[in-house]
Image (tube, rainbow, N blue to C red; front, side, top):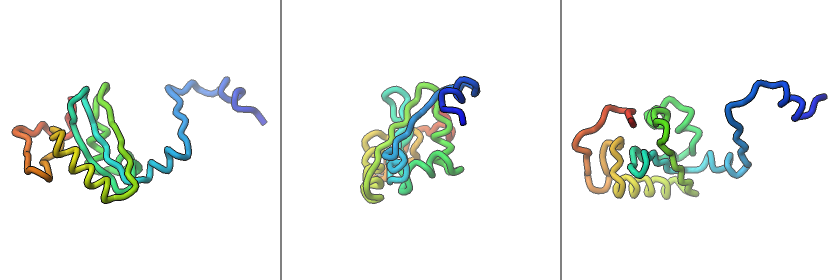
Length: 122
């Protein structure tokens, strides 16, 4: 049986390696709010009751929006212990940031004057 170093020496070179802890996998399934930024500008705020698994893997509108973010954009993920807290946090961030890809603000009925075409973060 070969060891890890021997296999890595003959295997194709990966583009990058990411090591994930058990804590990360646990958080992956927790309620969360995700914020997409281009520099300091908030582009989109969303929430998931089931963690990031649904956001990044399911063919949902949120998944498509996240997949469309451009080089240099960042996704920040905030994890919560309850669905209620995540839902309230999403409304809070939408209200105070008014991201251009969100269709409206649930707190103040803010509608962006001109909505850019969907999924275009450039």
